[in-house]
Amino acid sequence: MRAHPVHATGLLGVLAMVAACAAPSPTAPPSAAQATGRLENVTIPATASAFRAREAHVYLPPETGEPGKHPVLVLLAGVPGATDNWFTHGGAAEFIDEFATAHDGQAPVVVAPDDTGEDNRDLLCMDSPAAAVDTYLSQDVPAWLETQPWADQDTSRWAVGGLSYGGTCAYQLAVRHPALFPTFLDFSGESRPMLDTVENAVSTLFDGNSRAYAKQDPLAILATARLPGTAGMLAVGDDDEPYTGEQREVETACRRAGVQITSAELPGGHDWDVWRAALRRAEPFLGQRMKLDGTRP
Image (cartoon, rainbow, N blue to C red; front, top):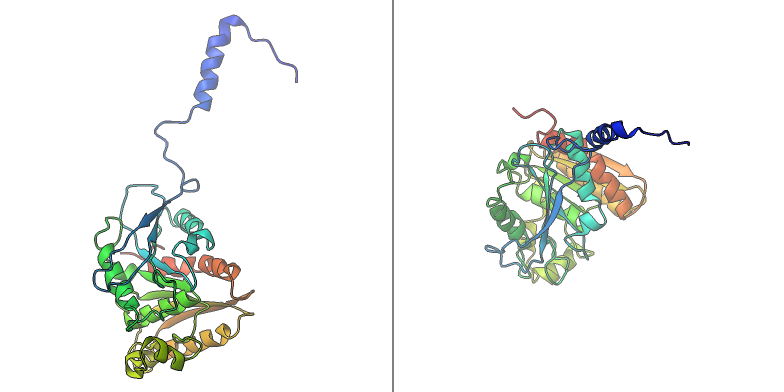
């Protein structure tokens, strides 16, 4: 393209006009579509449980307006697993950023605590002679959340979710502590905590004490409980036996106890493709349960 000459007398004016057009407005707030949150490493004290927990992670949503308190989404990893798996493999940060965009800047905080301990073992997400995992997740983590200025203390807006072992753990926590976690996401979890079998779990972690196990067994609790205020989303790959069958067993038990259940079988197996897709599918469910869809008074 041929350049047109600029007369010297008008050069300063032209440059000023170009600069004015190119410079962003200093008072213009960033758009929600461009905003991102931030990931932090944190230590959650195991005051009540003495659980030997690894470092946890927190993802704070993008702030597009005045800073405020957020509902809490606890996300749990599988076993073996790491507390940052939902961010390195599961797209949790991108999910929250997109959630905030879709909900006028409102989104939950994601807290990813340890659910397997420093030895990265399958501890059944229960209190046993081996470790007090339930106490850590249901007492120590909430106690720490009470000290955080960004956490809404209204637990009716809290949720817990996870994949595989973490999905089983999320479902257990919701059944055992419905006032604390009235909403849960169970992706590819088992129907009850096992080490291949219940008998092996009782023998290995409970020193053969089947009664101690049964008190925490979610299927045993659901057989007599009524939990009409609890809601869960179940998701599993359509090529993921035995988990597809076990998820149906969880759904049946939950519905009999009055739990509101949303379920889906997604294309795939026991893998992150399924779990990433399931998390994104959970957006409207979480928005409604956390009162981020206009339902909050």
